[in-house]
Length: 532
Image 1 (cartoon, rainbow, N blue to C red):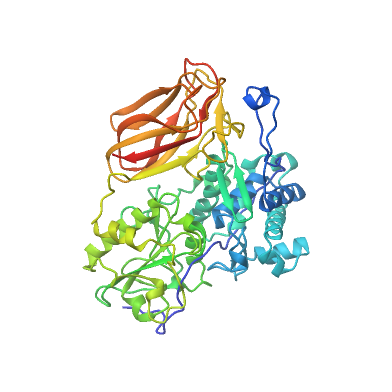
Image 2: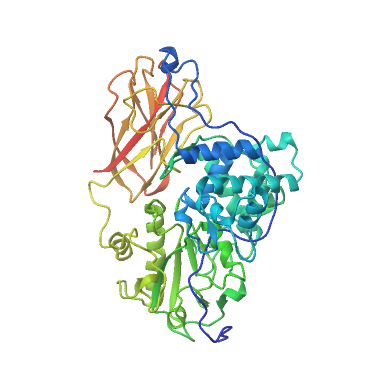
């Protein structure tokens, strides 16, 4: 075997953002406010809605207006990086700070650029959320100007794709596209984040990003080119770490593989993959798993030694799996991530004869001499090991609720408005649209644990002006089924749509269509799915 580094390399890894650059532009977009069409009952009644925003939402509004950056783009970028959590000024694994992940490492220096552009000191930019957002907006605007974006182009959020790419600093085109696509996916689906500094919301919209030269680059895991897909594990994409960040070997001839080590990235999915491609990082993991949908990327071949555990002996004898997120934020640890990771770990245990128990499937914090605490107290080891061993199938009584504000779980076009008019709403607000002779559905995405029978219920506020025959669409293995509810009455609680067979997997399972013979606004608020 070839050991590139005879001494143990420092170990964890990860990150947030990285290296190279591309650019593009930006636009002044109006600050978010609750808006209604004339058909909204609150307008008809002459009432007004008090829009409650906290300091973080105001910081985004102010920074966007001051620097001429689209406000929602700014929010989506921050959410992709940190879920809008500044982590009290503590750095990510790649040296990123604050809700916008302003970074200071040998290849990406957005923190330093922000300090130069705003005149704010680095400590303030690291620890104060408003300053951090302002700094990121200043950097993005500088990149847009350097790219030569005109005022008209800056007014189109789709023109900012290259600027987002440059902000992420990814080392390779495929990872650069992954990073920017994540931001634009959030713009497309919309998001609602409940942060320590108040709620922040971005409405869903149609997006068509101008990818420029990256349009010809296949997204990770979807192309037919050599090296796009993993040859070790079929579901994974392949994005190799820099050669300086792992040791070439011939395991299991050179070393036995005895452990699976569970990590948390302390950064974003795309940023972490990019960090492994940065020779300055000195770290890598074999696999990284995305929070939103459980997508996987492999960065080091299983035969080779990843620099992830901070202990040379354990590095030589283990496979490292990174999970997107931060140890102190349970919102990153989704069911889709747990299931994807458990499937990979089962595969590894079967392939290398690793016992499926907690003596061999361990956290980074359990490695002798470890200075890291991941996966941390929010990682559900009991559930994870049940998935790995297959000892506990999803029980009768399993239930999940998806609200129209659930990030990444609800999708609706710009034709659907947002209202807080009715006190019968399920959460912070609900969505509404005029009936039309086209479907234009609002969709609820649900991760169904296994193909089985499930009860589906809907929650909506009722009003005399709401739809008399709202069509709910249920996606079943035998085709879509439609159930109509009269939303003029019976609201403010769960209404049973029926019991249906749903296929396992994470996908749109329930929708609400605008195509109805009924009259009145069609309402989309929340749905609940329960195993029966």
